[in-house]
Length: 260
Length: 286
Image (cartoon, rainbow over the protein chains, first blue to last red):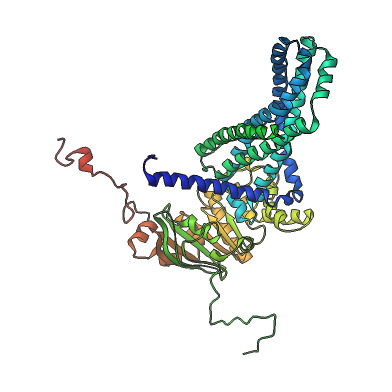
């Protein structure tokens, strides 16, 4: 595309707008008849198992290591000011407000997002979605919607697991290895972390990330070219777009939440 | 002439032939500037096997997609049992699709379900039959295609020919009125090929279906078809019974039916002339 030719610029803008519109229409088809998830909850439950249970390993192990690192780094910084008792509070706030939702979302994108995109893209390449359409079954409702709602439900749960395991990791490093007083560790945490303002913010963030990541993964799969290169490009786009979206939304939400 | 009884009976006047099941009226369809179908009109007779043939990329699969409503014609009308498919809203389209069965080229089975679940899928989605009844119907359909013993296999465990037979069982699960076959003979060994052809003909006759078969395979298709339509360059090159098409004098149809390498469909891809590539060919090396 040559940037100085109005026709090319116009075409580019129009096609991006058309893509945006197409994405919005698909989003409404997924979210609109939302009440229907109760009717086919068996499908949603199966997807929660595939997306959630199978991600627990990576979320748990990553959470543990992030907790370890947080414990070490925070202790190193706090110790200068003699405030190393606040380690528990700091580790918890970092995880629950920020790192839990964001890192869990990024890991979810890499593990579950790519598998969603590849699965839908390959079903499209194999004409399975076309066959379903010809059998008068809407593939968006039968295949995409259960995965969408499963992702939305799973994301906050995984973020919570990440934060919880991270706090345990911080405890192990801080109290067991570095000698922070356990009473201070838990006591300061209990006093300083507010359920609604801190934990609640984290939950809201992870719900928003759940919507975003799952939708992007499903959209890329649904729009993929039905060839091997097409599917591989779609999975790459899922990871890149979803990761950037998560980080961008994180900034927006954090800025909004500081004013509440 | 007996008087028409009120309500139940429709007097069939033997003088007027029954309406064709599928009809294309002056249909034009293409992508961008390229027209795949240009003013195409034909009729698919009820209860018969109609073969749709032509060169690759000639628009045969597009015809099937237009009948099924997956694409909309840009001009002209596509009629399914007397109704214009292009004017259907979503609900009417899905109601029409429940009366159609489609067999995709490689089966398009759902790879995460067993053969049994694949055939049961349309029944479980569209009917409220109990599981016991679903089991009976599925096993009957699988028996019709000879695969009742393969009910618990996964699609990855069956051969290509078997996968297509399972897809056929799935396509007839709801007892459709129209079954469309997209290249049912492509890549099959002679035994499977003969079985597939026999199944298509048998099912059409015993179940009273209308069948549309898109195929390249001349001999098998001519053997089972009642009506043949040959598509070329976006329009109909020939129509009629297999015997009539075989004797057609149209050069394109003649080349196609006799598998001649050169004719209206050229052998050499257009490009630079041979003199420019190799020099003076006749007078030795230049």
